[in-house]
Length: 357
Image (cartoon, rainbow, N blue to C red; front, side, top):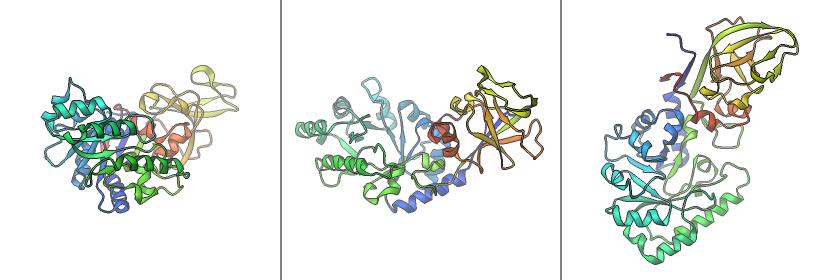
């Protein structure tokens, strides 16, 4: 069978990236973010790969993701933390499977204190992202109420809003906010706030556990031009058809690109159903033998048109062109479409032939 596109996830590169982070944080535990199908790369495969490398702490977004891991969890020393999605209707599933809930609200805390049978939990404090998490006032009220003493708290966590930025003033403000919360808990309580970017910014953010996700696959966790991570993702797509076009011809839907002169185009077998964003219209490029092939016109659901007019290397139907790989990584391809590598990564399509090697 001929596939229109091939996605290769490089296990050895993911392991190297993990080891780079390990070197950065020393003996501090590294938690692996497995949400969104491990950022589009296969939740069970990434779990197994990094468990073998010594990872024991894993985060998922919700209960359905935790249940996807159920068959892979063949050892009691793997901790599966669920970032949100605990309620009266499902708390027994946590107890049965020994999933560890992240408690974001006062209601969550009272529920787990009553029903959790002293099983471990995490408490999430909102230090300034204004997303999920308890406020400082919530934490003080809970402390005074004594309810926190009824919980088996494994970690207290928070999350930075802009730790990747050069300007660390807001990150430091969040750190100070978090330190106020830390003082509410007894000695020996463990804390975590560092994401991939914070890991590389300042060791004071590492605390008792760091959490990493996208950096494992090559997303740059810093704002430096020299990325400490290596690209672990390769996408190649097939040339479906080659056409000669004339000056004045329009390319694709809505005539969003008009040929300025006679030329040649190639129709490639990937589109917005395959993580090629519509924002790549007339923006960005694919590559063939290291040569840039500019994207022309609107991205279709299954197809993208590229300009091969200036290509000196012979290209023919069924040849593979590079979407992501040696010539452009996730960050570069995302930026060329006015989005981020995160969005490209987490939207990886199940229509690719997948190679995990």
